[in-house]
Image 1 (cartoon, rainbow, N blue to C red):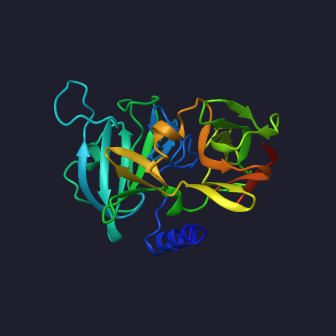
Image 2 (image 1 turned 90 degrees about the vertical axis):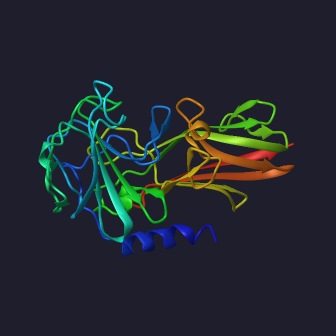
Length: 284
């Protein structure tokens, strides 16, 4: 069933209206689900943006103003516009220079200019934060599922894979070939990049297989909420767990039994570029 879910979600998103990029050139510095300070990125982040535009026609739901003087509704996104579209989609444009162009406006057209990036969000000056919400399902969607694909010929990178035992012993795979049987948490530096960009970005999917059997999948497709915490794919993949180890991503837990074991970690980006790392282990 797990192998079917990605295709099902992709087809479901294809049935929704497509969106246009809110900035040009479209070169994100952070992708959906990537590390964003102490939490997970809820959308795309763009740096040094001249003009932000609406991703499609819709209705302005709400605007939130930068809260410099502790008046009004506080927002970590600075000046923010929230636009409702058909089929239950909502787009969010955070850290705008101003909201003047939306004064007295209820309906907006696609690619309507909203202005340049501002300085009021909790982030780097000049950043624009773009998010897509599914109002009906109460989830945060990866905008890349609905936007025109970017040129991307680079496969993700998989580096510094390690296995941590229940007792806290850390084994660097590739160096350590002999492990004791038991449960391990797997960590690795997994990142992607786009053509023309040097930024380390989140991949689209990470899969762990033990002896050919799928053990764990992290799908960077949507964020759900449980008890106030956002998570990817499964409840253990919250920001606090996924990026607990500096510079690495939690890949999930696996059980190793005595004998020879083949461990495969595969990472794929949304363009379909894939890379895998394989380790032959002796479990004692």
